[in-house]
Image (cartoon, rainbow, N blue to C red; front, side):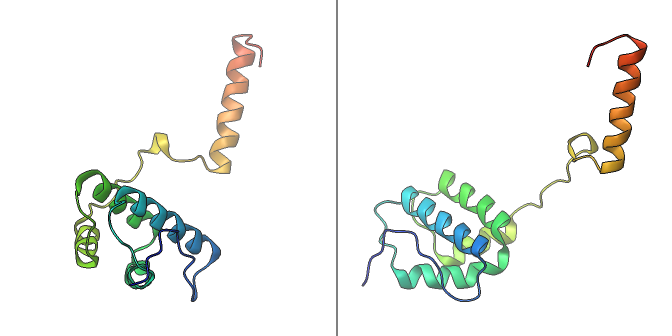
Length: 121
């Protein structure tokens, strides 16, 4: 079996961002499980089957696996983890990015407070 310890650049219809994600994914999982032989065929199959789950969910599951699993996971085990992955909670309003209108309102409010209390900007 051919062994490849370097991150692959998957071929096919992957965007540049997807290709970069998979290169980082394989580098990270390879570093986490250094005794595991990861063949090009394994990387191609896992990449093909896992691509539909998206980088965000795959990144979350990869961290769970790296932190909790002693041995390299099978494809079925990764898919199981993806299926039981809790949905991310929506950010509270305070942590969401401001819309342009909200940013304008905040800037006006800060300016008014600065003038009222004679605070230098």
